[in-house]
Image (tube, rainbow, N blue to C red):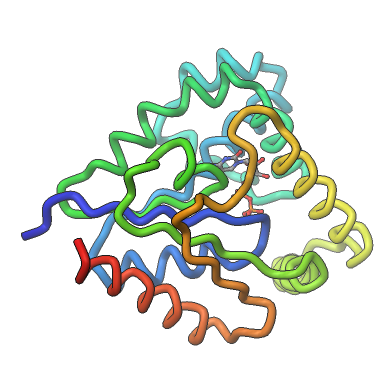
Length: 206
Ligand code: CDP
């Protein structure tokens, strides 16, 4: 019965998309693609001196496993290369092919429900206040032993939000038919349950 079923999960930095996407994929037995990693891998190559378009056109699956893709410097570079239309265009086919997998797929990013998979059967927009998101990223970084201050991380999150929402190509915004989940006051368990619920409703209707 598993004809393709695509779940699109969009939202700003550190809203909980990654955690929710992994849990949802495990629950339904779908494959998961963190599309932010594509932009991070291109950003990392730009830091290394490569032209971002050339990097995007020649991206290999193993590039998504490079060390250091989670750093703030790479996140910043990712949001810089993500404003380049030709870079985004070079990454479309890979993402769409992933979304069309027969066994079902979850893609998380910024423009999945709006541009990459506008026909996705289920769309979620996961968000939270900038303060809560910066606090979470700060805790995460402290656990990993990196020493950035809360103020620095908040400023970074806000700058990245602005770049992601104000860009001309595929700006970050909820698709009109997305279910919005604000995780500011939700535990991980509750946020995951809300996501599964919303997707189940769409599955029954499809
Ligand atoms: O994990 P976090 O939410 O902080 O970031 P990410 O999802 O890894 O994305 C890093 C950057 O890549 C974002 O700030 C966006 O500028 C860009 N991105 C995008 O433009 N489109 C996507 N589908 C995914 C990420």
